[in-house]
Length: 396
Ligand SMILES: *Cc1c(COP(=O)(O)O)cnc(C)c1O
Image (cartoon, rainbow, N blue to C red; front, side, top):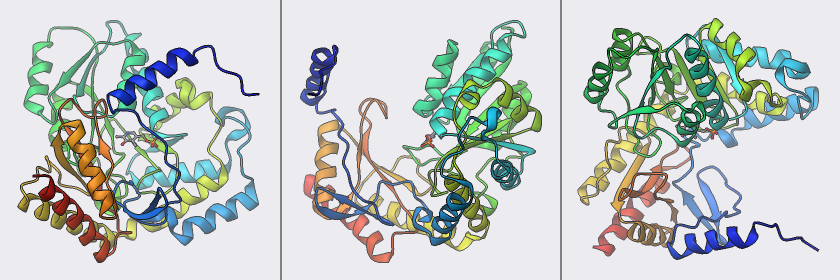
């Protein structure tokens, strides 16, 4: 007999409250194929996944994952500092460092875990130097970065989204306050699909001797030379992290930077130390993606062109696509109910475009988040554009 938890009455009420406000989330099972998804018994075009280059179903990744599982086992068996480190980890980390043009790289269990664990470790280390560090963060940074900052217990200075004049004003305003400066941002923002000006951020960081921490979750594999992301062209940053779960088509995450930084994190970051090492099949998929990604210029160009065409179609309909310049194209609606209704209408036309609502985005900025992939062929791309345009028109 399934036992009730003691908190069930409280939690049940909280869920009922979410339902009443139409903000309750549900988990939908659905076997995703490349660019498609099964939803309530129907196959829909998937315009909501982050599998930007379709690598999650690439045979080379599947083959190497299976091969490494068969040869090295399905689990690493221990944390990295105990007996979990295999030659495979060192090999993949060396390849990731080369890919990101950094001295070193360190694998993490996930992007969420990397951000949630690395930021408090660094901030606490900086605090031991004397005055507490001063942290400046873009207002729209990902929940995992927010979590890491909150875990540090530091008060943060939030600058308006991508407004580097505002950042400079905040830095100048606290010029007399002691303590090391940190700047935290993303190179491509997950819900707006716009880019940070990393070259200018780098100059600002240099001028204020600030540690620059950049999350490249949505740029890794997709933008920059060989898909290395945007930090390379900016001349490097202090720390760059990214996930291996999006364009990489696999799972896990990396932090890349100096050898000393990575060595120190392996010694001091709880979210690296006290968790089991990534398993061989996951490493196999990452290794195979590293074979493929640098040579995928044609796919990257095709993805960029598809996104530009989608934005042009949507803007003709009067749709606000925010600052998108990437494969992530938001359809800004504002109101939660109207956004849910639009998502339903688009699904009715065969395309899954998930409604993104607060608290994931700021109040009154609910939207559909369209994410394109090279797994979408010309037919799928025109159905994505048409389904949104027609549903938008019908709702006017
Ligand atoms: C997805 C995402 C993460 C988390 O990465 P996971 O590997 O999925 O845990 C972190 N930062 C940003 C900006 C993301 O979009």
